[in-house]
Length: 184
Image (tube, rainbow, N blue to C red; front, side, top):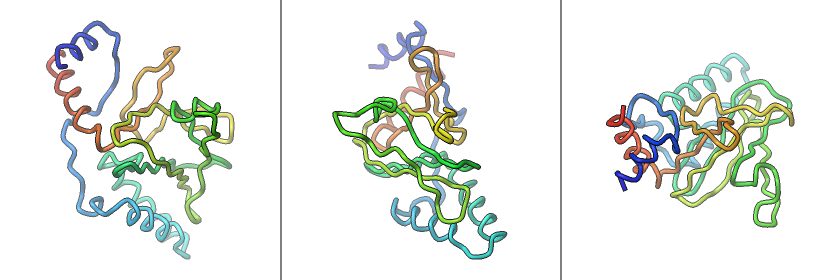
């Protein structure tokens, strides 16, 4: 397997960019369950005082970013998150045929503003070993890579697409990082 991955990397058939660190060290706060973290975000985003709400949500966001937890994943659950000004936010990716019908069903890819914050969220479930390419769509027309997700891979037509690394695939990602470090 390592030889195969090395051949893909060296041949240029497989390309990606990864953060410089290969270790994932979650903070104790981030060891809370998926539902606890989402409830925490809901509570912070609903604080009545606007100044305190912004401060608390920004702190939570910084914590997630520092621990490379955007998108936030646990088991088969994924919370796609976006922080910024927008009238609407949605997610398009290989999980929904890049906007077409997925498996004959329409995948609800619409994000919802969390409380009174500038954070948008879409929750979905995927197999634990899935790796999903996606983009964020702002206001129904502006497709962007996820500015909070450092894991990106070149997709079709040389467009950069982000990838979600589910917990079940984290070990595989660490193996790829080691191979990449040896190849460079």
